[in-house]
Length: 118
Image 1 (tube, rainbow, N blue to C red):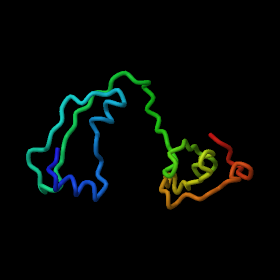
Image 2: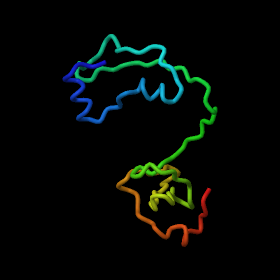
Image 3: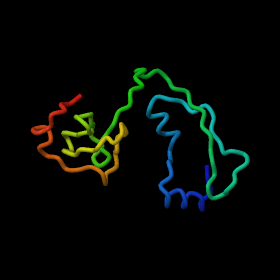
Image 4: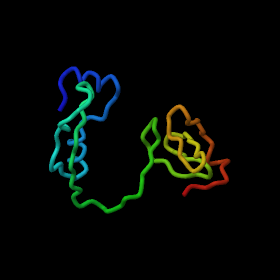
């Protein structure tokens, strides 16, 4: 919905893009979209989407994934761990730290962990 200059800025700053397509892929429907009428910065246009969720499993539980390989991770003691990527991510004060820079390679983690997979 933005002009070319704003699109270049969006690319530079890694803005979310293609929301309508993602909604359709997830069996949803965009019933209204458009730009806010009174934008503050023309290089940062704000849009609104009204979305209807169709069907689905009804499961609203969060699903976490390894930020590097996008493989499933689960709680393993005091961290999240992905057996597929062999990476562990800490949980600090109850908050998962799922940044690629915070993951550690833990190829033998399951052999030595006392936490067990949940």
